[in-house]
View (cartoon, rainbow, N blue to C red):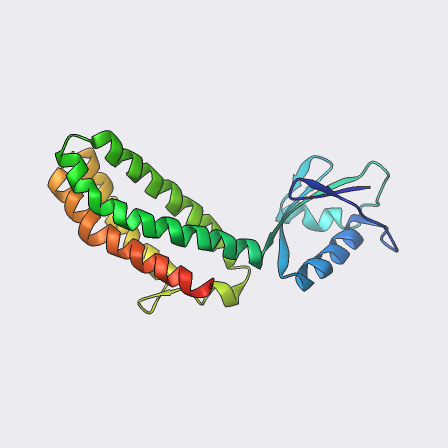
Length: 198
Protein backbone atom coordinates (compact mmCIF):
# COMPACT_ATOMS: atom_id res chain seq x y z
CA UNK A 1 0.00 0.00 0.00
CA UNK A 2 0.97 3.64 -0.40
CA UNK A 3 0.50 6.19 2.40
CA UNK A 4 0.52 9.92 1.65
CA UNK A 5 0.42 12.52 4.43
CA UNK A 6 -0.26 16.17 3.54
CA UNK A 7 0.72 15.47 -0.07
CA UNK A 8 4.02 13.72 0.77
CA UNK A 9 4.54 9.95 0.38
CA UNK A 10 5.54 8.32 3.67
CA UNK A 11 7.57 5.14 4.11
CA UNK A 12 5.40 2.67 5.96
CA UNK A 13 6.20 -0.81 7.23
CA UNK A 14 3.10 -2.87 7.83
CA UNK A 15 3.27 -5.05 10.93
CA UNK A 16 -0.08 -6.61 11.83
CA UNK A 17 -2.22 -4.14 9.87
CA UNK A 18 -4.55 -5.98 7.50
CA UNK A 19 -7.28 -3.36 6.88
CA UNK A 20 -7.56 0.38 6.22
CA UNK A 21 -8.98 0.69 9.75
CA UNK A 22 -5.85 -0.96 11.22
CA UNK A 23 -3.61 1.57 9.43
CA UNK A 24 -5.78 4.52 10.51
CA UNK A 25 -5.77 3.33 14.13
CA UNK A 26 -1.96 2.95 14.17
CA UNK A 27 -1.48 6.29 12.43
CA UNK A 28 -3.82 8.16 14.79
CA UNK A 29 -2.03 6.71 17.81
CA UNK A 30 1.31 7.94 16.42
CA UNK A 31 -0.19 11.33 15.50
CA UNK A 32 -1.64 11.83 18.99
CA UNK A 33 1.84 11.40 20.48
CA UNK A 34 2.95 14.29 18.26
CA UNK A 35 0.00 16.58 19.09
CA UNK A 36 -1.54 16.02 15.67
CA UNK A 37 -4.80 14.69 14.29
CA UNK A 38 -6.25 13.61 10.94
CA UNK A 39 -8.73 16.04 9.37
CA UNK A 40 -9.19 14.49 5.92
CA UNK A 41 -9.06 10.98 4.42
CA UNK A 42 -8.87 10.00 0.75
CA UNK A 43 -8.87 6.32 -0.20
CA UNK A 44 -7.92 5.36 -3.75
CA UNK A 45 -8.82 8.82 -5.06
CA UNK A 46 -12.13 9.13 -3.22
CA UNK A 47 -12.67 11.61 -0.37
CA UNK A 48 -14.09 9.80 2.65
CA UNK A 49 -16.72 11.78 4.54
CA UNK A 50 -18.19 10.90 7.93
CA UNK A 51 -20.96 8.83 6.33
CA UNK A 52 -18.47 6.60 4.47
CA UNK A 53 -15.90 6.36 7.28
CA UNK A 54 -17.22 3.16 8.93
CA UNK A 55 -17.56 1.48 5.52
CA UNK A 56 -13.83 1.73 4.74
CA UNK A 57 -12.52 0.47 8.09
CA UNK A 58 -12.81 -3.22 7.16
CA UNK A 59 -11.49 -2.74 3.63
CA UNK A 60 -8.51 -5.07 3.15
CA UNK A 61 -5.13 -3.57 2.28
CA UNK A 62 -3.98 -4.34 -1.26
CA UNK A 63 -0.69 -3.68 -2.98
CA UNK A 64 -2.29 -0.84 -4.97
CA UNK A 65 -4.19 0.71 -2.00
CA UNK A 66 -3.49 4.47 -1.80
CA UNK A 67 -4.41 6.14 1.50
CA UNK A 68 -3.97 9.90 1.57
CA UNK A 69 -4.37 11.77 4.86
CA UNK A 70 -4.59 15.47 5.70
CA UNK A 71 -3.13 16.04 9.13
CA UNK A 72 -3.00 19.12 11.30
CA UNK A 73 -0.73 19.55 14.32
CA UNK A 74 -0.78 21.91 17.26
CA UNK A 75 2.62 23.17 16.05
CA UNK A 76 1.30 24.08 12.59
CA UNK A 77 -1.75 25.77 14.16
CA UNK A 78 0.54 27.85 16.37
CA UNK A 79 2.74 28.79 13.39
CA UNK A 80 -0.34 29.96 11.48
CA UNK A 81 -1.59 31.89 14.50
CA UNK A 82 1.81 33.55 14.85
CA UNK A 83 1.69 34.68 11.21
CA UNK A 84 -1.89 35.94 11.66
CA UNK A 85 -0.88 37.90 14.74
CA UNK A 86 1.85 39.69 12.77
CA UNK A 87 -0.47 40.28 9.81
CA UNK A 88 -3.29 41.65 11.99
CA UNK A 89 -0.82 43.97 13.71
CA UNK A 90 0.32 45.37 10.33
CA UNK A 91 -3.28 45.59 9.06
CA UNK A 92 -4.33 47.45 12.20
CA UNK A 93 -1.87 50.23 11.31
CA UNK A 94 -2.83 50.14 7.62
CA UNK A 95 -6.54 50.50 8.41
CA UNK A 96 -5.76 53.86 10.02
CA UNK A 97 -4.28 55.00 6.70
CA UNK A 98 -7.41 54.22 4.66
CA UNK A 99 -9.21 57.55 5.31
CA UNK A 100 -6.17 59.48 4.05
CA UNK A 101 -5.79 57.18 1.02
CA UNK A 102 -9.49 57.58 0.13
CA UNK A 103 -9.37 61.36 0.48
CA UNK A 104 -6.20 61.70 -1.58
CA UNK A 105 -7.56 59.73 -4.52
CA UNK A 106 -5.56 56.57 -3.77
CA UNK A 107 -8.61 54.34 -3.66
CA UNK A 108 -6.77 51.51 -5.39
CA UNK A 109 -4.24 51.33 -2.51
CA UNK A 110 -7.08 51.43 0.02
CA UNK A 111 -8.89 48.57 -1.74
CA UNK A 112 -5.70 46.46 -1.72
CA UNK A 113 -5.53 46.81 2.07
CA UNK A 114 -9.23 45.91 2.37
CA UNK A 115 -8.69 42.82 0.18
CA UNK A 116 -5.75 41.79 2.39
CA UNK A 117 -7.97 42.20 5.45
CA UNK A 118 -10.67 39.94 3.96
CA UNK A 119 -8.08 37.27 3.02
CA UNK A 120 -6.48 37.36 6.46
CA UNK A 121 -9.81 37.07 8.29
CA UNK A 122 -10.78 34.09 6.09
CA UNK A 123 -7.43 32.42 6.74
CA UNK A 124 -7.63 33.08 10.49
CA UNK A 125 -11.19 31.73 10.73
CA UNK A 126 -10.12 28.55 8.95
CA UNK A 127 -7.16 28.05 11.32
CA UNK A 128 -9.19 28.88 14.43
CA UNK A 129 -11.81 26.29 13.36
CA UNK A 130 -9.03 23.68 13.10
CA UNK A 131 -7.60 24.83 16.45
CA UNK A 132 -10.84 23.69 18.09
CA UNK A 133 -9.37 20.18 17.65
CA UNK A 134 -6.92 21.26 20.36
CA UNK A 135 -9.32 22.78 22.93
CA UNK A 136 -6.55 23.88 25.29
CA UNK A 137 -5.20 26.13 22.51
CA UNK A 138 -8.58 27.35 21.23
CA UNK A 139 -10.01 28.24 24.65
CA UNK A 140 -6.90 30.23 25.59
CA UNK A 141 -7.70 32.89 23.00
CA UNK A 142 -9.50 35.65 24.88
CA UNK A 143 -10.01 39.18 23.57
CA UNK A 144 -10.91 41.53 26.43
CA UNK A 145 -12.34 38.54 28.30
CA UNK A 146 -14.38 37.48 25.24
CA UNK A 147 -14.00 34.15 23.43
CA UNK A 148 -13.33 34.01 19.69
CA UNK A 149 -16.92 33.15 18.76
CA UNK A 150 -18.36 36.17 20.59
CA UNK A 151 -15.59 38.42 19.30
CA UNK A 152 -16.31 37.52 15.66
CA UNK A 153 -20.07 37.77 16.14
CA UNK A 154 -19.58 41.40 17.20
CA UNK A 155 -16.89 41.99 14.56
CA UNK A 156 -19.02 40.63 11.69
CA UNK A 157 -21.73 43.25 12.27
CA UNK A 158 -19.06 45.97 12.03
CA UNK A 159 -17.68 44.39 8.85
CA UNK A 160 -21.24 44.38 7.40
CA UNK A 161 -21.54 48.13 8.09
CA UNK A 162 -18.12 48.58 6.51
CA UNK A 163 -19.16 46.65 3.40
CA UNK A 164 -22.29 48.79 3.08
CA UNK A 165 -20.26 52.00 3.41
CA UNK A 166 -17.92 50.74 0.68
CA UNK A 167 -20.85 50.01 -1.64
CA UNK A 168 -22.25 53.49 -1.01
CA UNK A 169 -18.76 55.05 -1.38
CA UNK A 170 -19.38 56.84 1.93
CA UNK A 171 -15.78 57.87 2.61
CA UNK A 172 -16.56 59.50 5.98
CA UNK A 173 -18.17 56.32 7.38
CA UNK A 174 -15.47 54.16 5.79
CA UNK A 175 -12.79 56.24 7.50
CA UNK A 176 -14.56 56.19 10.88
CA UNK A 177 -15.12 52.42 10.82
CA UNK A 178 -11.52 51.75 9.75
CA UNK A 179 -9.98 54.00 12.35
CA UNK A 180 -12.26 53.55 15.36
CA UNK A 181 -13.80 50.10 14.93
CA UNK A 182 -11.64 47.76 12.80
CA UNK A 183 -8.13 48.96 13.62
CA UNK A 184 -8.41 48.65 17.44
CA UNK A 185 -10.08 45.23 17.17
CA UNK A 186 -7.31 43.93 14.92
CA UNK A 187 -4.72 45.18 17.40
CA UNK A 188 -6.49 43.40 20.28
CA UNK A 189 -6.89 40.21 18.24
CA UNK A 190 -3.21 40.30 17.30
CA UNK A 191 -2.21 40.65 20.97
CA UNK A 192 -4.58 37.90 22.13
CA UNK A 193 -3.18 35.44 19.59
CA UNK A 194 0.41 36.51 20.36
CA UNK A 195 -0.19 35.70 24.02
CA UNK A 196 -0.87 32.02 23.31
CA UNK A 197 1.92 31.35 20.79
CA UNK A 198 4.88 32.83 22.65
